[in-house]
Image (cartoon, rainbow, N blue to C red):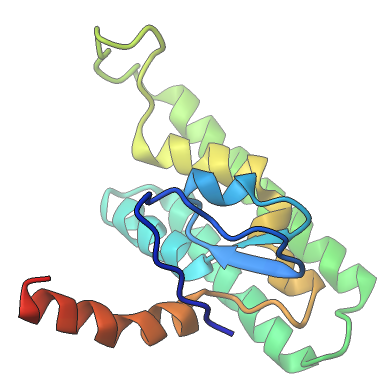
Length: 170
């Protein structure tokens, strides 16, 4: 289902939701309580594509794995994926992340932003941190057949409204 919600404040979110919310990792979504989060893998695949173009080999492997996971989910449909297969897929996911972290640790430090106290990280490193921290949210579609791989249906529902808004200048 797609639910439209207009508010003066951009961060205004719905309350008392239940079930799963599939989103693009916008941090305010994580303030939603009592829901399962699923990260949109189409967004992740786009980020991985940019990293592949920058010659980060781990990104190509992760992209291929996510697409294979999607095929696996489609093959089993509404049935649970057997635990041995699921464990193997999650193990591959972890191995690819380890290779990615190893790659980023081998690089010289990026340019330091003097306005921030912490060191800046490269886009690929930030994505790896997100993939590790939110592993369950990224892979929720594998575990729960009701959870889609992407939030593209909701974005598609919104696209015509946004297009008309741009045309009318509103």
